[in-house]
Length: 258
Image (tube, rainbow, N blue to C red; front, side, top):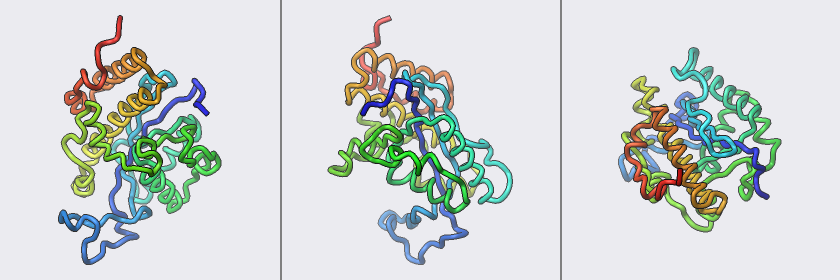
């Protein structure tokens, strides 16, 4: 069933670091060992340090882009700061009830949010009481672009970086996820937030392209929506690296008629 025209959309991405108070790295690296990296923590052991969001109205117009919670990280212990972040996020989603849009959010972002909320005793009533937020074959509450473009597990869709490049976006710019922990330990939260917003912005533009693929935005409607979002992001100024790397002819096509 198609979402009602009044639906709004919250494009979502999180950045995490290992919760070393509750999880200890194995003596021998696993997972990323071939590349000399650290083992990837289990889902419950990811401490959330940033939740980046981009809010679109029902016409796919930008309402807001930014990070949930205190942009400086807040005060208190690590647990207190993460709890405050989760409370702010859950309160907003519970009140606004947008459709969540993610890339691999069903496999990572939302399970991490749920388990960290479990850790800190934060209610996610909207997540568990509304079936469509967790039902993978509906886009009523959550549209995971990775899942839909992989035909719900029938194939592999590729990384966000790969699909962003496929449609004329720059993909990863400056840093990637493997550097987040080092930046966090160095006190560079602002750099992590900026990186998170570059992923959020590109996920939003991939979402519009997916709407074109679905036939829910066609021709000039897609061009106008994509142009408006790119222009709004350029005016905002926080994802300039993304804007500078866009192949507009490929992403948008010929300019819409005035």
